[in-house]
Length: 367
Length: 116
Image (cartoon, rainbow over all chains, first blue to last red; front, side):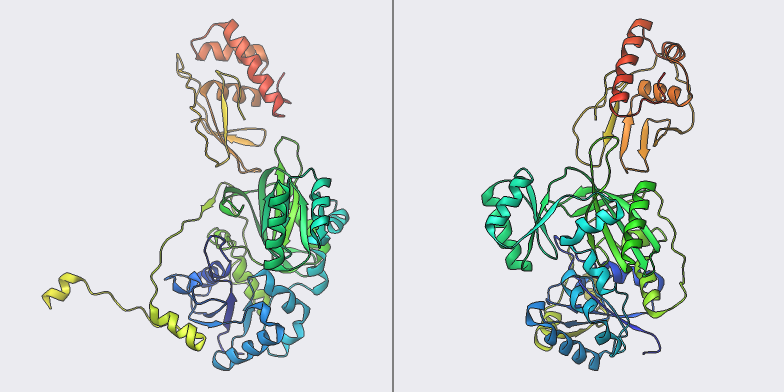
């Protein structure tokens, strides 16, 4: 291990559906500004590479998951010959399964990670939510896994026609007509493979809980928020911190049942009405894209996850975020340089140089 | 969420709303107080309310604020009417009708258990 650990983070694109990696980097640097952080990217245009504040010190390309697991490990070994990182923080759903399934491959390489057990990971799978919720007495929309179009329509008819069609790992589309359902089904098959999940539609406000489990059934820290703004695809673009003992109790019950280790995000919907209950939509096995927001409120979960992975004593305690604090996402334009694109595209790596100062016209004329 | 006028309470979930907020002009300065809790909502003297359990926020007219503050103090209806007529330029019969309507709305929202 390096004298000062080197951290690898994935998921650096903060586009229409923002990935969490840049937020993880920003949170880590709030507590450990001296850390060396490298980005593992699938595309040379991942926006986080070009950020002034969140960019990694270096970046390396990874093969897409469709290239297979051997290609992934081979590439990781090649990267570590150049940059021998000590900790891996995976931030994308599709990366999780192979890592969780083979933790020994990380261990034998000396890579630390904060990951759930395979059993926990499987138990929170979208297709297993009903069973998990039965054990924890938590409500969840009815969900049916389908592998063909006929089953898709049958499942939708069971739920009244208007349903969410969801990808195995990611993405959901609301579909109210047979044509829309089929289009969504084939899209999910193409993007994420089978099965496709058909979920009963429950209308209401959406609440998310981000947290960190210790692997023994306890939550080390968490923050709950209500989605204030949603994109057309349902992604939260603004959120308000809430503190509801009922929501806290449900989160605790789920994490205790799973004995979850590492970061998580619980997604709930609460139907309109004064006495409605939270209904669990899904459990994400990683940090969400809004994970830096709690860090601004003294609840730095990425830093805590790093400390957990390395067995370090926490540098800062995790505090409860104050209800009423909120975030609004703000899209800005960033400047890149063709030389950076060329480096990543041709060599698969980019070592960031300090930015060049832009000469002011007046100074140029005077000199 | 929309309550009867003139006591009025509007919910702002952060989603866009284009409704005007009716204004009730007090005839005399209403009894000013600091924040108070009514059910899970904390109300400020300026009529802004925040529910920490749901993250919802609201605005209330001065009349609605006065009624909810009175309910939080466990006042009886006649006492609430006394307070309304002492604070606002309104006849007792109109105030009584509006109060009934507002209390019915609170009941509809599940906020009636302090009403009496």
